[in-house]
Image (cartoon, rainbow, N blue to C red; front, side, top):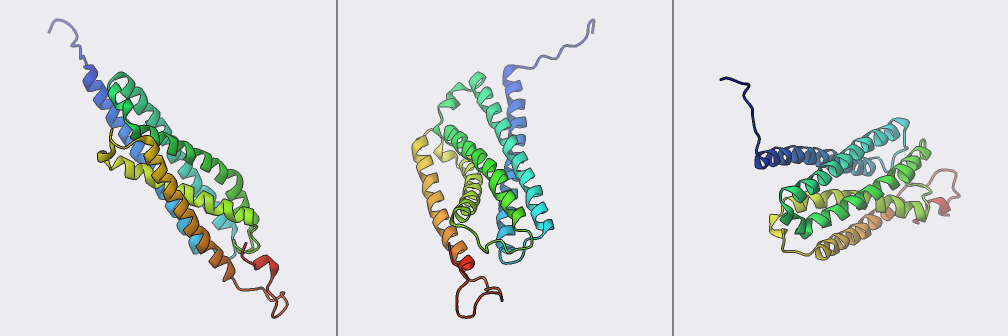
Amino acid sequence: MNGPEIFIVSPVTLASYARTCLRLVHFAGLTLGFGGAVFLDLMFSRYRKTPVTTELADNVEWVSKFVALGLGLLWVSGLGFLVLYHFAEPEKLTNPKIWAKVVIVAILTLNGVAIHKLVIPFVRQRIGSQLLVGMTPRMHSTLVGCGVVSLVSWTMPVVLGTAPQLNFVVPCALILAGYAAVLGQAFLIANFLLRRASGNISVPASSTPGEPDPGLAPS
């Protein structure tokens, strides 16, 4: 061999390597985000009738950081796939399912901002008190809405990613309509369950016997 050996990687091979790396990042994001969202919902469900502790509030904020990291990885991998498709497989950009996922991830991002700006501070304000006691109707709707949007929106990318039958077949608007319908049903169910849990919380001893405490009335 007279000179240094030169390795030439074909564009097809390079695209294959890039696709594999993006898939790994995408799966990592889904794992962190979906797992963290489910864990938070289960945590709220378990401790909804017990006084909020500093440890619980810290755990909620800690897990939410992993969810945010997962969302960031989802954006990185998603934008990476769009760039890859633009240069290597432009026909895939006409797949309506891809744009439906982009819209859902954008909704997840807005919901994440709401969680960090509204829900986490609310949980910290409830330290020493039960989470559902004295909750205003506005906060009630915010808590239910954020939880429902988080769980449903993290589930949808997983479902869409495992359903190749939807590729190039189902319009983006129809996918988003189904997503909205699931959100609406989930909100109604969660709202009913949370109101029922709020109404079942025991009345403090300071309340007048025989008279319901106004702060405990279902909002």
